Image (cartoon, rainbow, N blue to C red; front, side):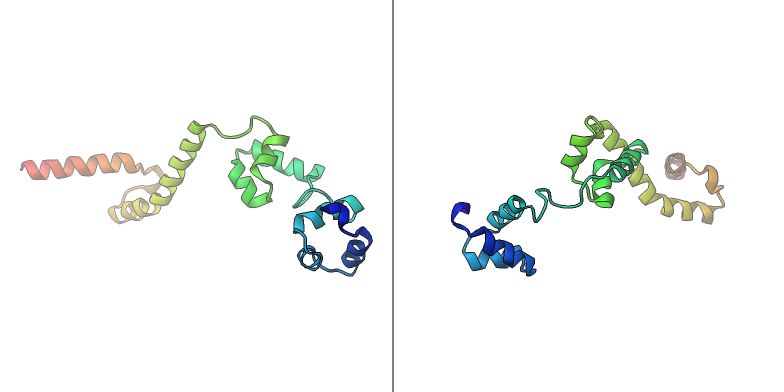
Amino acid sequence: MNARIDRDHVRSLITQGVTTRVIAEQLGCHPDSIRRIRVELGLSHPYRGRPMTEERLHTIWQMLYDGWSHKEIHATEGADAETIRRYFPRTAWTHHEAGEHRAVLRSIETAPTYATGAIKLGINHINYDPIAERRQHRQRRTHKAAA
């Protein structure tokens, strides 16, 4: 189908600033066909998104070194997880590491409520252990129920 599309006409439309979608609608073809012709004519690059420059690769490597997950890097840097795997193989988190991360996030989400309760009770919140506090609370309840 690309063989019958006039490349010179596509080139003139692109230089006029017409979008790929509009060109495809005018010529009655799929936008991917226009994208392929753009690449063929040297008017755009075959990849989508930001290119992986040395600086960007270094930034992503530093994020991986600091323990960031591929998902966090994707959200921050915009690099696709598959691209990260291709440039940095064997850097994805294991299931165990992902589980530990979720556990830490859960403890952080619940920490403020425990900390405010600790302050009201006069507990030193720097050395505060919510698990030990729950255990003591359960023991107090069972002693009250037994009495």
